[in-house]
Amino acid sequence: GVMTVATAGWYLITITLSDEADFANTCDVNIRKNSTMVGGRVYWASSSAIATPYYVGKSITIMCEASADDTFDIYGRGGFYGTTGGTPSGASIMSQWTGLRIGA
Image (cartoon, rainbow, N blue to C red; front, side, top):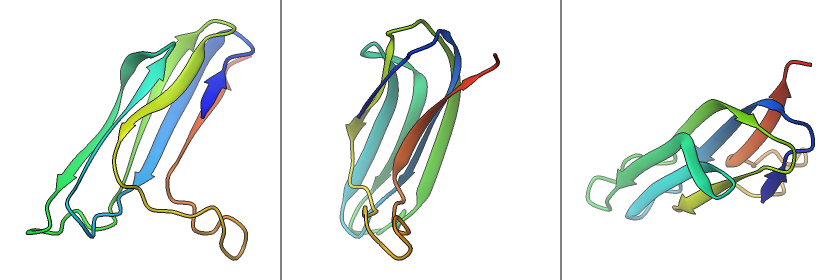
């Protein structure tokens, strides 16, 4: 998804990803503002021979200034673990991202 900034200010953007690495897999995911990378990257590589990292989780948080109508998105590739269901609802969500404006 894409987050569109409604109010200019400083934002904390966080990616949390969990790898589904029971197969050869590379994850390379970036935080972008207006389709340009802004300094956040989650990366790992695994092969079937070493089977690591196996369902590993990684997070990154950046602080970035944004103007009204700027957009943030997460762009990249990888095999990610998590579902949208579960008991309680959402209990299996393990890959997500969020943006939060800080200050007044």
